[in-house]
Length: 116
Image (cartoon, rainbow, N blue to C red; front, side, top):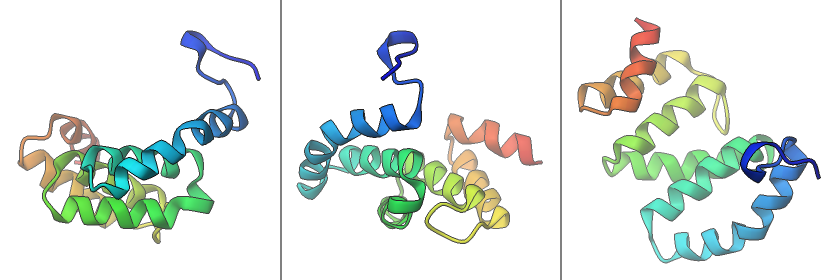
């Protein structure tokens, strides 16, 4: 495996292999109802395995965002924007970015501004 800066894999296969080493730990922590572990698992699945695990990632982020977690709302918006685990829906992505930005999420503000 070829590594780039800071030892991160330069290719998706390297990323998949590296993630598989920690996936079980994240799944166990997520099963203990730790929101940050759930988010890490979902974002990793959406990024590294968008086809295979995209729907599971969407379901996790939807539940977390329904609980009011602003960072998860932004991640959910990204899934709508890119059509990962859900039908592509730029309107819904915009609504979620705007909602999160209006609640003070700095990360969402840039996304929202880009769409105005």
